[in-house]
Image 1 (cartoon, rainbow, N blue to C red):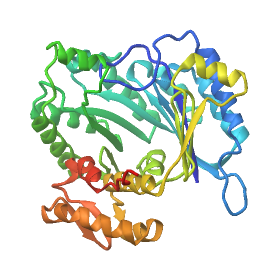
Image 2 (image 1 turned 180 degrees about the horizontal axis):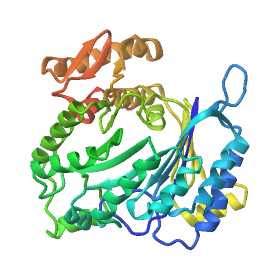
Image 3 (image 1 turned 180 degrees about the vertical axis):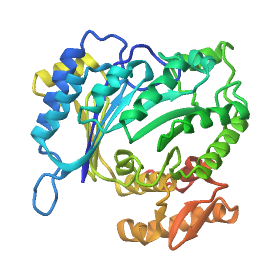
Length: 384
């Protein structure tokens, strides 16, 4: 089973914290949609099952960005139809649209409910007006609540995003943000720490003293509150930043974490076939020009054994599935297994990692430190 990710590189305005590839100019939107459709067709033979050479079945289609909801319903349906035209698609695929509240009017939600889209991922981020203004979000608090009221009437499978660790947000405010999200009955919540990426507006605002820097202690407290509150409300913490009710895990994202193949369509989109990773050029004009000239503007790298081991460590520790010691030995060999056990010992001693049924996982105490722990378990090839 495989997936297709379609990157829509347009936004109405730039969020201060975002370092994804996008443009706030919509001038090339029509050309981009045609280029995306063409790339979908150009890459139809990439996903093969090794034994028979047949194309693998597409189980998920994911519109990410950018802001995919800036596309019209007709444009979205057109791109989905191109996937169906060129690939084998499962009988009931998960088809997700990332959307912002300001694009989700009652009329638009009703239209989307009649389309092939069956999952919405809504970028709420916060229900507080001051937070939204600080982050330069295009929506306000009232729009966030109104769109969730409407969306839950027509969609069963909804995820919403929340950001924690925002400067000035008290523990009580953060609890209220979570409670407000829960009040709409959504079955999935993705939540991320506010991260200061280089060359973003947020980074400049912090450097000039206009916004306070996020504090590690507050961020850690918010994470613990998040985990505790959502688990008490029946959510499963199945990935470091993702919480879902039973049967509502993101199939698209779970496929990434479990190492399944996927094709990334659009500028800056990444792809993975089990052995090679590829990424498209992160420039809208150059991307469109290349596709119009029947060229794929993609760079690829073949992953080494160490690369694949390191990726498995990173993704495995972030999920409830953990890192299988049996798989480490089978796929990477005894040398890697012994190395992992040696590197993990100090974290086992400090109750940050545990081994149960031959699966290595972070303890509740170690969850917030997962990425740092993973980096210490990476296998670094000696320089020649």
